[in-house]
Image 1 (cartoon, rainbow, N blue to C red):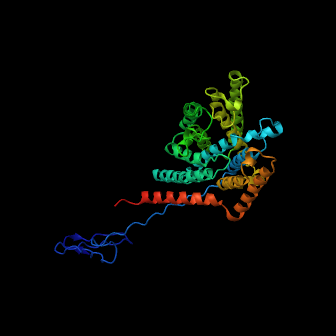
Image 2: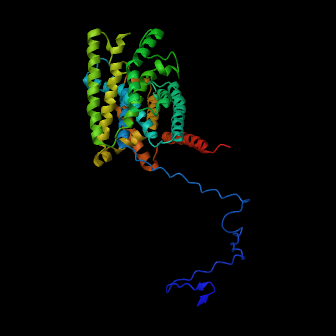
Image 3: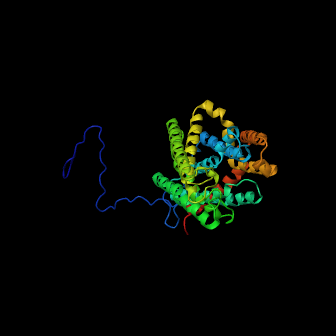
Length: 418
């Protein structure tokens, strides 16, 4: 077949013949516009908002049993210091061994508070997360400060550490994100220069380097209290660094035991030698300024006593971590772990019982019966409560209030500005 213009083109068999283009006089067919109810939304209709991405729930990390056991050792150690019979200066070694717990137990308690702060903030990644952590710590301080003041005002024959705890928490807020090396530098300053400032101010204002209640509650905790915060912040900072370590590794626990033991021996030994050389024959519990700076007596707050206490805290924590690194040890020590997990409740209950027993039980104990009864009762109570009810009552209230405040702050920060 031919056309006026020439022969028709040939296509291979099975191929498709292309459609002829429309004549030049016929306009090209334009597809109709999409229906308004189909496809893209018309210009007058707002585009649908993208789906809100809900943040993935952060997995709960298991509690570190060894830290709870160490906290129980601190709580029970303070109980020994309060009710034990080894408080007479003429008592033999059979009673004097209880002095081992005096001062060192509360120092361990403060060091573990720093560990708790680090564990509380270990999941923080964004500035908003850190704002929530700071809020949580500040709210806990705001609760512990009046609680400690009320317990102390009742007139218990022991010094309550909770108010100092609150002050230490507030002092830690600006340094939460500092690298570990700077935290250790600040801790070193607090433990070496802090005693010079604290003991010097005490001597200048009260005529003695011993603690005093003349400057009252609150700011008095910085210098004149039994636990002067300008010195005791060193324990908290060391604990914050400790909490960043490999707490689940046995090698880390062994390093804590060895390093802490060596540090304690060196500090206590140096302080004892200097005391014997500079104050021969004097009562070591009543050294004046400036000899108080070399004392290693409990609550002396000298550089040697504080650094020695840090060594003890590290060694005890390492032992507890090591003992609970095996399943058998963790199961065996689970009653102590339950006690340490609700340390605020146990500590407060112990104070209530001591208050009921009266000053005679603290200053002139006739036997260790009340001590044993209260210690065993604390462990049994904590074990049963934790088994059936979980978190301790005061711990539940404290974490509930602080968590609610932190969540409110985080939600407020995430809300878009209008």
